[in-house]
Image 1 (tube, rainbow, N blue to C red):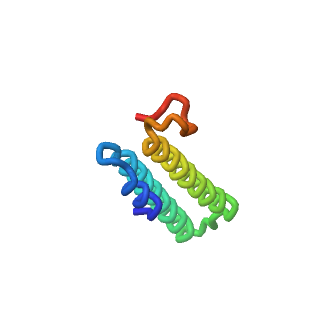
Image 2: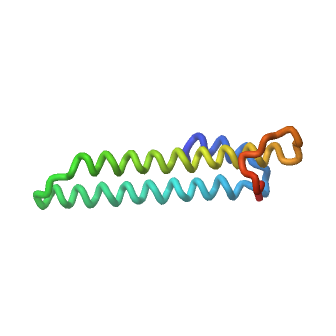
Image 3: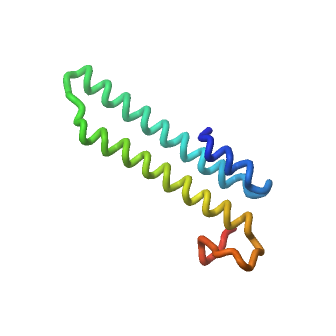
Length: 98
């Protein structure tokens, strides 16, 4: 499990831990997608098709950006949950959290 997700998991109250678990499931799905992509590129290389370096770089950057966004939004959600009921807290989400 990603260290940041593990840290956020420990900061969530018991009934809210499913949020970190969801992020963990996203991480596992992304890893599976990356493994699938590696297999496709390897099969193409065996058949003589050269991988497009720009396409591969764009794929990796996109995956990193999506992961970063998910972690960032989870951090905001955890902060809002931890400060629930604090009238001086500036909420990250106007509609509140779960």
